[in-house]
Length: 126
Image (cartoon, rainbow, N blue to C red; front, side):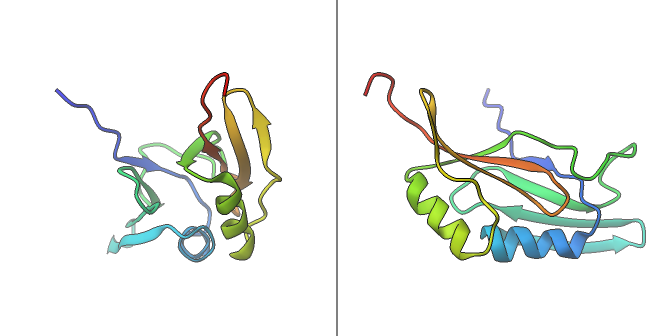
């Protein structure tokens, strides 16, 4: 049996601001934006080429979750330099490229402080 991670909820304080950040600045595809009621709004965005999406909205969590509390979300790309350039051109405040034995990374946060890493995988020893 396959177990596929397909959706991760990200807590944000301003849905429209976060939607604009992820769609317009980071470049995620806007899949859905549905206001079901005054208490429930579901916005789904997906990085290009990804099998996993994020959800932002209202009424997504059973208990209060602090906006900005998610850290360590990670996207993998083939070319970290190109990813850095694209994020910079789109106006994302992104770190310099950082090299580690396990990959090359850049880091950014959404307007609430939810933390993201973008990784280019490297082959050990080469």
